[in-house]
Image (cartoon, rainbow, N blue to C red):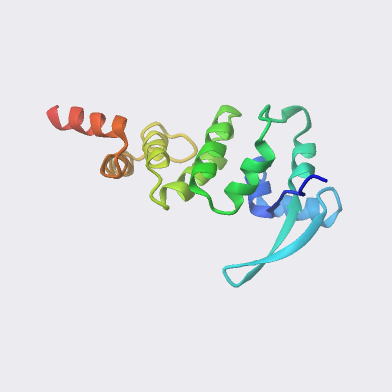
Length: 159
């Protein structure tokens, strides 16, 4: 028997590129059934089956064999999974959701996500362009050992 993978409604909203209110309505009307509740940060969070989320994606379903596990891990707060899922969302042109996940991973000191945030702020991907925040995230990525960021910071300092 395979393990049922679940995620919170907020993660479902990111993956579906919908707002949380819309996902709540999908839950209320039974399109996306709530399969249980968990306590997170002293709040009861409604959980949904990731297979149901992927079914709603339908034709837009992202071709990634381990996607359900990746979504579950990202929902649990694993920075690497958040970063990897964000990259997939970028490929699917879901930049606001990607930005949200990059930020969550970067706030856990994940260097790749910091570098992606630099790119998001530098190029206005999923967020308004902001040169100051871009440089802040580039420097943080470099400080956390991101090799490309280190080279970029060095090149910027020479100019």
